[in-house]
Length: 464
Image 1 (cartoon, rainbow, N blue to C red):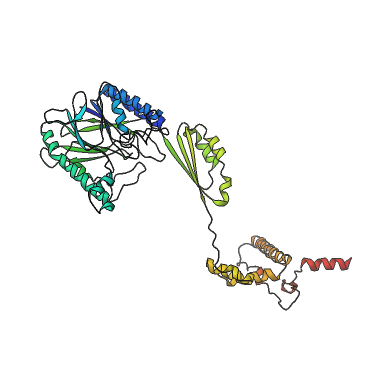
Image 2: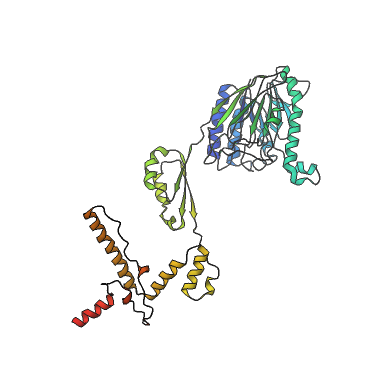
C-alpha cells in the first residue's frame, strides 16, 4: 500500500507561486503513482487568511484534485501558521473522497474510501496515530504553579501519549496491519533547513520516545529539511522502524539546504520503505562580498545565474557604503528570477576621551586621548611641540630634505653595488629647536646648508 506524505506547504500570498507549483507537481505525481491515501503533516498555510484569499482558493483546488483520487488526512500544524479551526473549512470541499482533519490526539483508520476515527469492530488497511501540535499554555494550565515548566511538561506528556500507542500498534503488526504515527514538532538534534542542529531541552521529541510508539513509520512535519532515522526493533515481532521529516514542499527562504521532496511510503507491516520524490522547487544562490560588491565578478558570474533566485550580501565600512551601486547590480543580474540585496554597514565607533573637554592646552588634550587609546605619549608630545613652534615651510623643508637625501643615497648605493647599510636621514623630530628665540624663529634648528624659504626671499630682495 502506498501513502503520500506532503508537509509544510505554507500557502500564502508571498509563497503562492512556489507552494502551488511544488504542491501541484507532487499531487500530479501522487495520482500517477496510484497512492492509496495522502497525509499532509501540518502547516498547510503560512498564517491566518480569509476563505476567499487567492492562496486559500489555490490550496483548495489542489486538495480537491488529490481528494478526487484518494482519501486525505490533514494534521494541525503550528498555531501561528494554522490558527485553530482554519483547516476545518477544507472538510467542506466536495470530492470523491473526504478530507479528514486531525486537530486532536486521536487514532484514525484508512478504509477503502476514507480516513475515519478507529472503531474496534472494523478492519483497516492502515492505522494512523495522530499527534498534532499541542498548546503548551493548555498543558501548563493542567499543573498549578508550573507555568514556567510548560516545555518539559509537554515533552513528558507527548512521551506518555506515544508510549500509549505501543500496545495497539504491536497487536496490529502481528495481524499484518501497517501502522503510522504522524506529528508536527521538533526532534532533538534534528537539522534545520539552514544546517543548524536543534539542540535544547524544550523540544517536543526524542527519537527514543518516537520509536517507543512501536509504529512502522513516524511521519513528521515542521522542520523544512528532509531527514530520516531508522531503528531495528528488539522486541517480537521485530522489523524496521523509520522516522522521517518530509521537509517543506518548496524552498521558501534563501540559504536552505537540500532538495525539496514529497515522500512516497510503501507501507508493509514490520518492513516499511519509502522513496523521496523531488519537487521543482526554486534554486537559490548566495553571493557574499567582504567590502563593496565586485561588479566585474558579478558580470562574470551573471550567465550562470540566469533564472535563479540570487541573494547578494555584503559588509562594507561606513566610509565606503556610497560605493555600492545597487542599480548596477540589478542591471547585471537582470536575467535572474529574483535579486535580493542585503547590505551591512560597519559603523566606526569613535571613542571620546573622558575629561578631554575640561583641559585647556592642546598638549593636555593629547595626553587624555593617548590615555583613552593606549597610545604612547612621549614621542607624540615632542612632535606636537615642534609643530606648534615651527612654521609649515620649515616642516616641509625638513621632510623634503630627508626624502631627497634618501633618494640620492639609494642611487649611489645602486651604482656602487652592495655596501654598508645607509644611515637614516635626520627627521623632523630630531631637529633641535632653540626655545630661547621669543619670536618663534626656527632657522637655528635647520641642518647645515638649509635655509628657510622666508630667508631666501629676503636675500633675493637685497640683491635686487
